[in-house]
Image (cartoon, rainbow, N blue to C red):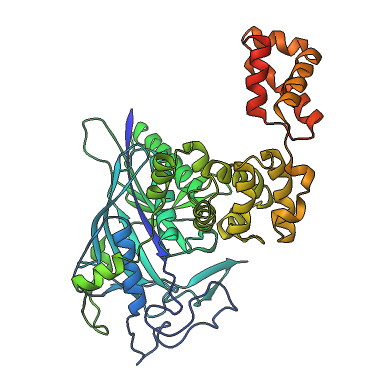
Length: 469
């Protein structure tokens, strides 16, 4: 039985308006080769100037994942010959990374160590079509951080959870949009296997995995490939791999370089830089409530069910909307249920949930929730009204009549519950025999007859009194 050892290097593009060493715009896309200049294409005589915003965001990223920040740092030159960087080197960091010794905690409580976070420039994009390779340098020079985990990951599932938590943290902190489909977050996964009691095996690196499920699947495939080689008496060769998601396979691209092959040396065209304790603390103060903190607050303080909280806590705009509605007086329970059951029905994609761009304000939403909280309308009526509000941008009162606001008096509800029992004798017998879900048949009768006005919780109490169960 083989054990897995895995570490992940995650490249994350920073939310800077301009590139890391020049004033070219850093937006995704655009006509090829229209957002580049002599600096980011490395032309003779062009000198880089380090983007202060990139350094600040990198520090913020380090603080968000519990790193220690190096007060003094510098850039290094990483030499390699490949057309995605025409100057034949990348400006990165080697021996003095900006952030070191952090961690991300998994739901199990296990901590995945973060060895370092360093800043660097992104490379251009190569497009391979019909036997030709086309080069787009728009991405070249975009500000990146590389987050290097320790080899603490022992299962593909842990790898996926680590990458997902890292993505959530970076998004929540405003460091990156982490859109893997656009390449603003990319994972390189190092994989090795060994038998219990033996030394770790030779590792391979799977480059540029573009989805969270891809991380998990690629690790499984590579671990299986290595196991088959070892079981057949072969040896693992340190290699750079590619994950082919369409065909569910991994394959060798080239033998893997070591750091010696890159011939690192201090970048001569940029100066050393330092960060003061005061600057670090000022950046720390800009950190928002991070996803796991939010999850704990919702579950422990608001007493909300964790399975429901997990449907909302990772969307920054959705939780801001929810928190504002609660601060306006809405109950957390009803607000959460209406968002999950009704608002989400109008937001079909993950991107729409992340934007959470609604026509109504949190205050309008809160007013609707409070009507249900105060039992002025039934929760089912709120669920009926909310889609109309979302479609038109109007307030709840525009869709509520005086008849909607009048509930049932106790005598009428008792009489209706009695009729429900008489009309649903089989369901009553099922309830008496322990099949509690059968009571839903009586609820349906009551809600239909009362046109949604009945208080279901009170109706349940009365029904159980009538049938003695």
